[in-house]
Image (cartoon, chains in turn brown, orange):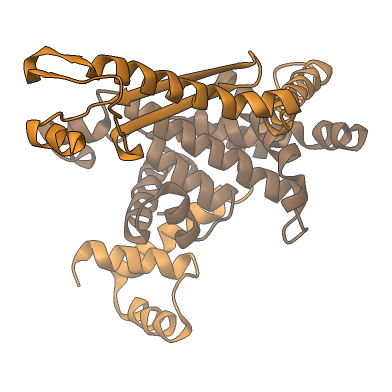
Length: 179
Length: 171
C-alpha cells in the first residue's frame, strides 16, 4: 500500500489533468481521478507492463470520464443533437470566433490559449481531440472507447480541428503556420 | 468521392492513418491541387500546435487529503468484497436450505386445507384424499442477506382447479 501511495503521489496531477481536460469541471475531475486510482488498485494484477503505468492509468481515467459523459448525455434533455434537429447543423450557425493576437506568446500562454479554445468545444468534439492529441489513441481505439464508428471519429476530429483553427487563427497566422 | 470524404482523407494522411500506397497516391494529388495542399498545411499546423499543448494542472486539494480519500475508498471496497466472498457458517448454510423448504411445506399444508373447502367446485374432499402438487405449480423465490442473517421466501402458486382435473385426482 505504501508503494501505491508513492505512485499516487507521483502521478496524481497528471491523472487529474487528463480528467479535467475531458470533463472541464474541477469537482468531477477530482472525483473521477480518485475513482481511477481505486480501480487501478483493484486491477493492479492486470497491469503487465505492456504500456507504462501512467499510460495504463490514463486509459482508466479516460474510460471513467467517457462513462460519466455518457451518463450526463442520457440525463441531458437539450443535447446538441436535439438542437441540430430543429435549427440545422451546428456548423452552419457557429460564429467564427477569433483569438486576439498576442505578441511574444510563451509556451505556457500558448497552452492556456489552446486550453481556453478546447473549453469552447462541445463534449464530443473536445473528447475526440483530447483522446487523439493528448492520449495519443488511434482512430479505431477512440471509436471503440466512444462506442461509435471510425468514420464518426474522423468527422468529429476534423470538425474539432477546424473549430480550433478558427479559435486560434491569429496565433496560427502570427507564427506563419497558415497564411 | 465528395468534398467531405476528400477532407477526411487528407486528415488521415496528416495523422498517418493511411496505408503506404494510399498515402503515396494522396501525396501526389497534393502536388497538383492547391486547395488540398492548403488544407494539408492547415491540418499539419494544427497538429503541430496541439503537440504537447495540454495545459498542466495541479490537483486542487492536498496530496495527503487526496490519498486519504483514495485509501478510504479502497478499504471500503475491500471490506465490501470480503463480505460478499465470506462463506456462510454451518448454521447459516443449513438455514439457507431449511427456510425455503419449511416455507414450501407450510404452503402445501395450507393448500391441502384449502382444497377441502372449495365451494365453487361443489366438491368436498375428505381427509383421506391426497392433493398432489407438482413443482411446476410453485414459483419460489428466495432472497438471502448474510449481513442481516435473514432469508425471505416468496411462494407463488396458481393452480388451475378445473373440474376434470379434480375428478382425475379423485380417481
